[in-house]
Length: 316
Image (cartoon, rainbow, N blue to C red; front, side, top):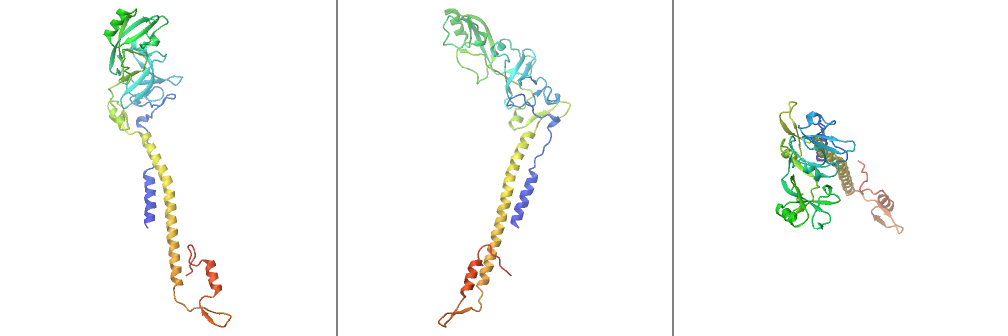
């Protein structure tokens, strides 16, 4: 009876854990562009692949013919997307043509939902290549064959260099520099990705819990946190694989236990019957004496048949 209960429990568990392939709210499945490892989901949406309902205003992304994901900033143009961190609400972008430092010089985030991570001030110096600047980091993509450009975080140091060398100050810049990008030197290479963040909509807590934000209805007024159906299905699949392995193994174990228990019962019955007193068989030896016991043919027959061995049948 206990064995049947275990089987019944496993069958019920298999039914309960069967995956529910419910569609995403308003048919907004996550999207991917090219070989990018991150997903495109609310508040972002991929134009042409996801409905307008799937994204928040200002978070439209495009996937070009080369499989590159692009973000358009209204007053700064297109940037390629390197990564999106939904938990921290940070999008990492760079210049598609390969000179993010030049794009920093004209960066204007107004009109977009994004703002720069903590910004830092730099003074730009232009130094003749004849001057030995090997101890300093230059910004290669805004330098040329005759002059090297240095981005100096200390205004005092920049003034000193301008007074004591042939370098001249050509401008200054305030640009977003994430904490992990700060090179903590007097000169820095600004040809690095831009880390932009957003506050509205705030889906940090939802993303941390493994959910996906989205509109509650078609009026697009309220935002809530939905379960990540893809993640849930993954857990269901893992559970089904475990059950698919465990169920046959458990059934085989139960069958083996039943067989062993039944076999032992047969052996016990056999032994009990053989222990019952009965009239002894006799045999006569050549000298005429009578010996009490089993004759040799009976002993050999019992040995061959294995009357009380495991697996032997007992006739009722």
